[in-house]
Image 1 (cartoon, rainbow, N blue to C red):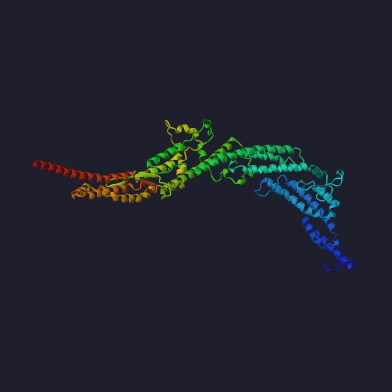
Image 2 (cartoon, rainbow, N blue to C red; image 1 turned 45 degrees about the vertical axis):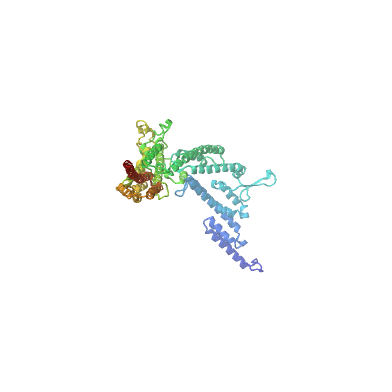
Length: 601
């Protein structure tokens, strides 16, 4: 490096310096001769170029590197011709992507030296560079990536074509330039078709891919000429693009119809089924246990009957019922990944009716399994809702109601708690038995044999009862609800014991107590107070609650209150009767006394 203010070193006229220059140039030549490839030669020349010494004659070295580069291009050409039929592709890579990577590898080995050579004006203008470039233009992998520019000078007749630098090009390059607009337009059209192809493949649900194998093969076949016969010089590019467009239009419409059918007619129905409590009837207000069971049975029959149009009578004739209801395994083709649509299709699998029939049955079994999952979720949700109402502590309205009645000397409930539990257990069984009336898919042709005489509906021969009832989660909830009504038994006993405080109303010596009161010859005030106490007691009985909510059971009090009022009024009526008889007797004695006194006078 030169220090600031110092003159550059000048070795002209110095014989010793000239000898050093010759030695340095010889050193450069020897160093370059040891390099076996053009990349290392260019890298070393770049380092020598930083010395900024004209005596090294690096332009000549670059021309020698160009000759070496031409030899490497010839080796690459021979290797390309040998391997292009079956190139070496990385494992697990799609064939098209592998071929693109393979050819880009060749292009990269040529592009990097060319970038360096184009920065050397004396090298670019040399005849050797033009020869190498003309040879390079004949390499197909390079033509696919060459950037072409048209530089105009003066009038159109004086236009000069330049490529990546400024040298004249062969005829093939000129053809590329003059067909530029056509090629770019074809490129954009094919690019949009490839993008559309990827979009269509992505939009196809993975579980439909086995059945759409013929459509995917059709898409591959229509693109196949673009990998072989259709090149940038082909005259059939517009026809090729139109053929691809027609096939993509048809497959896109078909895929959209399939996708809409799945989302609107299957997924939505299964989702709604899984999120509803459609297999149990839950009343808003408490009803009698027998009515609760009867309403659930009616509800079961309503959801169990599915009428099908006569036009679908032969809809499932192709189906094998035994295979269709078998669960699919984890290795099923329907449980593939999202990128399955872009994988190479195995064309060795025959496209016959046997394969199609097998794929259809597997598809049917898949959706049958999805339906079973929805039914299980629906049943679980129904049982959980029923459990919430059964074990609620004032959060929800009771499910069933019973009446407290007076059976002297006891207070009891009718229906009894055992009957309430029995009806509740039958409702639980009814929830599971609902699935006996839901026939498995593909059994509709046997529907006529399911009906008995008249309007009687019998369970389907093939149904979902066993599958749903044996599910672990369903059985866990079902077993947890067994005997749940007995949880309120202590509360009911405490309530009955509480109302036994009125047991003085039905004591056995009621008549004797009233008789003793009458024998005391009570005054009118005392009698009035006694009747007023009876009225107050009757009013307090009327003020008792009309019902008591104990968990899922509501105990109605109307009959018990009526019985208490009857017993309370019996005291009043009996007392009035006894007082009437006693005063009647006194009055009769007084009348007889008056009569006897009148006769004596």
